[in-house]
Structures are given as structure tokens and as C-alpha cells.
Image (cartoon, rainbow, N blue to C red):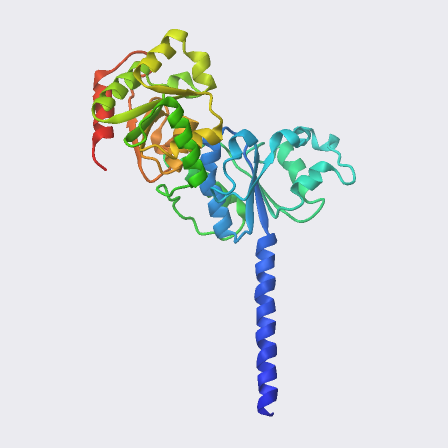
Length: 360
């Protein structure tokens, strides 16, 4: 064969390899997964390691989350999550009916909801439940899909982190030979940008904060009252921190505004600036400017930790071995006393202040 012929054959081989590689890349990009997560912000944050694990291990082109968009809206562009879908605009309630009564019409919206996904992971329903059976039927109306139901809560006696529980369930139920790996607990899961920091600075300027100093954000609430450390502990620590050069801002959401009396809110305002009822995107903006954060076992504490903020997580009845916030700069302080949420503790205040003022 002449030299020119060899060059042509080599060129054809190169083109064929390039087309194969391109085809494989397109196939990966079209292979997507969706996670049904109906929980609040803390649950959504704790699901991020699962989404990252799926994306990496299953070589997926994208992972979406279906849930409450009030909590999920901050994730695309800042995390491994590529897209979100609203649980309120999806007829998921139909999936809870008896399978014998479950019916799908041609071009049913439920079929369209799951048509793009090769993997469907759900925290709704139970294994073998009506929901799971109907979800499998719905997904397979359009294509072959892997449907996996995960439990939100670990069994009694479980002593590893909840994020590891989620990934282990996926491994156990997938039917694939996936090597287990420890969930990285020190990664920044949510990354902010210049727009977040600019908005955070604007919010702080409105409160009169000196942006040149160290900023401490305190969120004294939680969804569960028994998870809330007694408010005066936070107020006293804030006063002591101010004496050591910290600017303090209190963050109050709807739960705290409903829970605290007018007098208690005045107590907070007498100690530091107070920002109330912010949208979640504005909370992210505020936290992107914080040098430290103090909070109970709450969704906002999980959010602060995931953003990489130096976070002091105050735990009472819940087990931090299972539910500690994930992030690169998390310190857990736990009080097992019955008075955790009922009265101030000088010992606990000193412990928290010492942790805050210890150089990094």
C-alpha cells in the first residue's frame, strides 16, 4: 500500500475514534438522574453528597432534585445539582393510590415528569409501597429506568453520618458493583459568588454594621423547640464577642418571629443588629459575608457549614455523630442537660465563647 493510502487509513481511524468519543460524551450528557426530596433546607443540604456521589460514580450528565423550590432555588449554579423541579406543580399524590386503581392517560404529565431520567431516587414512599410501584410503572411507560427508594431516617443505633446512610442505601439497592466511599465531610458543598457577597454587603450596610471587622451571624432558632439552646446563652455570648471586636448580627426567620414575644425580640435588638424574615437567597448572601456563624441544629446551620463559613453548631437532644453539619470549618458543641432549652448556662456560654475566640 502506498504512503498516501496509509495516511488516509490513519485519518479514517482518527475520525472514527473521535466520533466514538463524541458519541460516548453525548451519551453521558443525556444520562440523567432525579432525586425526590420533599424535606426542608437542612434535608436538601444533606442530600448534596448523595447527588455528587451519583454524578461521579454513575458517570451522569446531570442530577436534578424535585422538591420545594423555596429551598432548592439556591442550588443550581452553586452546587453539583444541575436543575430543580417543583413538587407543588407535579401530581405526585396520584402515586400513593392503590396500584389496581392507578391509571395513566396517553401523554400523561406524570410520564413526562420522569421521561428524561435513567435513575430516579426517591425519599417519598417506602420500598414495596404503592408509591414505589406506581413510580416504577410510570417511569417505564417511556423508557427503562432504575427506581430506588431511600429512607430519610436511619435505623435505631445507627452511629455514622446520615449522608453516608443515604449513599450506602443507594449502593445496597442499585444492583451494581459500586465501591463504597466515605462521604467527604469537609468539602464546601455550596459555593457563593461576587453577586452574593455584594448583596450581603448591602444588607449589612442597612443594619449599620462595620464591614471592616469580623462578622458573627447568630441564628438562635430551629424547627424543633427542644433543639433550641436557651436564647440568653446566645445574647450573653454575643455581648462578650463584641467586647473582643466582633460585629454581631442576629438572623430571625418566621419560626422565631412566631415563637418570641415582642419583649424577647427587643432583647435581641438591644444586643446586636437583627435581620428578619429574609429570603433564602438573601440568607446565603448574608452568610457569604460572615466570618463565623452560631446556630442550633437547624437548616440554616447546615447551610452555613455547607457554604464553608466557620460554623459553631449547638446540639442538644439530636446526635451530632449522625446529623452534624457538613463543611470544612465545623465545631460541634453539645449539651445533654435537661435545661438545655429552659435556662441559661454559664458553663455552656464560656465553652461557646472559648471556641469562638480560639484562633483558627
